[in-house]
Image (cartoon, rainbow, N blue to C red):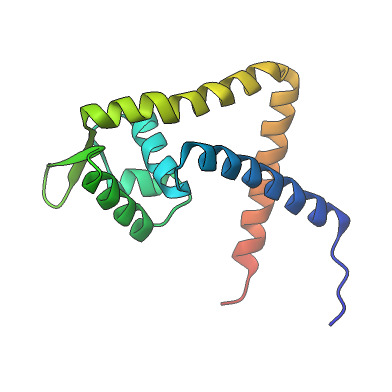
Length: 147
């Protein structure tokens, strides 16, 4: 089958792969899986006491992966779950989890902050505007897909 892929599509996919590869390099150095990073970052972002559904809604990982990652982090002693209004379980970092986040997640966030602080505000605004426009058009195209 022959099909010509648009050069813009090729370039966008290349950029996304490049970003993904950079994060993979970071996570390999930190000995973290994608889902572990996402869950721990989400706890940092959302605050302790957040719910599993909050993490799944705040990230790109599905509920099943979120659940299995939370169980793994709990087993490893990094988080604890405390009952809230049934069936909700609130997620908290243990002391070792707080130390782990401090030494493994916060440096990544600080690195991201340093990078973003190096980008002029005008360039960042263009990036955000372009991304928003792209995402809206992409969502519209997804809505047009036949079932």
